[in-house]
Amino acid sequence: MVLDAVSVNDVEALYILYKRVSRSIIDDMQEEFVHVLFSCSHRQNHFSLLLQLFDVFDVKRNGIIEF
Image 1 (spheres, helix red, strand yellow):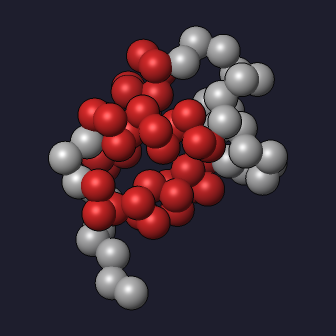
Image 2: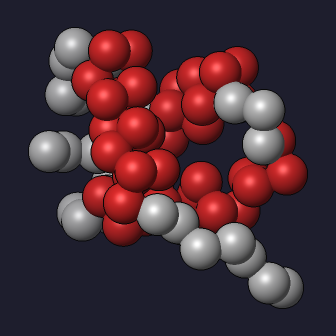
């Protein structure tokens, strides 16, 4: 499977969106994150890319993103 490259601007935009959507740390689960991204994104075919990006920030591998 070939994935498009992710630019720094893409990551920054995802981070800003994430900060706007959720203000709590404990309740931020992967499904909520992906749902919000898809509701605001025109690139729904990048689902696996989004999951990989989530995994980059889920350093404890517990389904929670911590910045």
